[in-house]
Amino acid sequence: MTTTNPQIVRFYRKGGHHEVVAHVNWETALDPEVEMWVGVCDSLNLVSQGRTHEDCIRRSTEIVGEFLKILYKEGSLPDFLTDMGWELKVELPQGVSEDDIRFDVPTSFSASVACAH
Image (cartoon, rainbow, N blue to C red; front, side, top):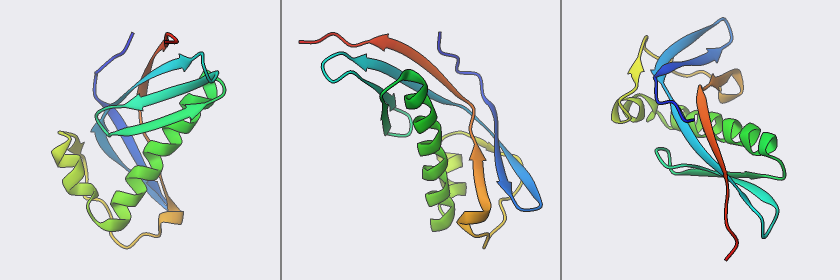
């Protein structure tokens, strides 16, 4: 079952963390033709894959974090959060190296097995 309740995204940097209220939903499916799990996050237009469901979930979480890092580095993260309807709890710091930040994003996954055609 997929939940859509907003949760806290923690934005970590050296010396503390900042919070954003958000939620990311992924749908995962096993593709029997290639024996790979594929993850799709429609709201962020992101995809992932892995040999196992756990690997797909891990990679999906990493991809969201890297995506948010890119937006942060470009300076477009606050506008993106607003466009998504996510609530920024505090102003994000500027000028922090992307090596010094990470995002802990709540996600939910729904799984299915894709049919081979």
